[in-house]
Each structure stands twice: as structure tokens, then as C-alpha cells.
Image 1 (cartoon, one colour):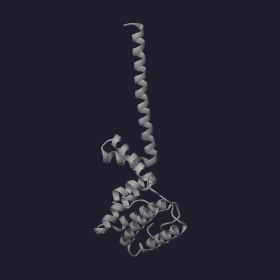
Image 2: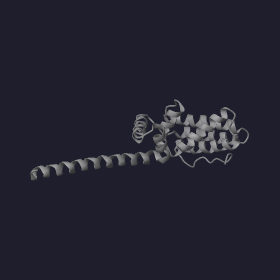
Image 3: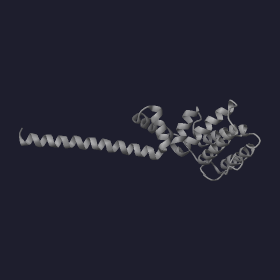
Image 4: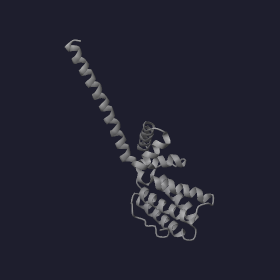
Length: 188
């Protein structure tokens, strides 16, 4: 082998190693970006549901693209006040009718999302859309929704209903755009 051939092989190997390293760094950066955007629980859930990290990341990127194409808007001051008043009434109803309050809380959260511009299709799509802008409350939203479903079947306990109200409160505050605005006293 000539010195030129050896040098060429060394350069080709170095280019190949650099290319592989670049791809690995890019994948790590993409994963880190998605973990930051969606949080560990939502990212892990996507990986588990899709069966692979690559498919999960493609799905999370597709969620981002879908939501970025939407016209998500803040609530007007009047809508904000109206929804806050409704929430306070629902919260008060919890004492006498926990199941009814959970059902109303679920509906109110849906109304707020619709007013902000989120499509209100099936729950899975709604949760996926909300996870893009509000990833930290997705575990709460899914848990509250499961309890609300149990409530419609008459199998939810009062403690579960109380937990659902707490979960809905967290989501409500988040989608309203003013965390800490509404304090849940009836179900705390």
C-alpha cells in the first residue's frame, strides 16, 4: 500500500467517524429538545405507546407542527372573568354533588380550550394537542379524564372525584394562562 492510499484511508475513516459523531450529536440534541418541550412523563409515554424512540420523536414533532399551525389565542378579559366565575361555582358545587362538579369541570376545561382555539375532537387528540403547550399538566389531565369516565359509570369514589377536581384545577389554571388565579377550596 502506498503512503497516498494509507493517507486517503485515514482521511476517509476520519470523515466517517466525524459523520457518525455528528449524527449522534444531532439525535441527542433532538431528544433533549423534545424532553425539554414535553417533559419526561409525556416523552416516556410517547415512547411507550409508539414502541420506539424514533417513532415517538416523530410523533412529538408532528404534534408540534400541528399545534403551531393552529391559531391558539389568549382569552379576552371578559372570557377570563366569565370562565373564572364558572370555575368558582363548579368548585362550590363539589360539596353537594362531587360527581356533577367533576363532569362540569371537564366540560369547562373543554370550553376554555375551545375558546383558545384548540380543536375539540376525541380526547386522545385533544390531549396530544394540549401537551405541546402545557406538557407539565398532561398527567393530571389524563388522570382527571379517567376519573371522569369512572364517574359516568358510577364507579368513582369521593376521594377519586376530589383528586379529579384538583387535577382539573391545575389544568384549568394552566390553560387560562394565569396559574394560581383560582384556588380550589371545596375539594382541597
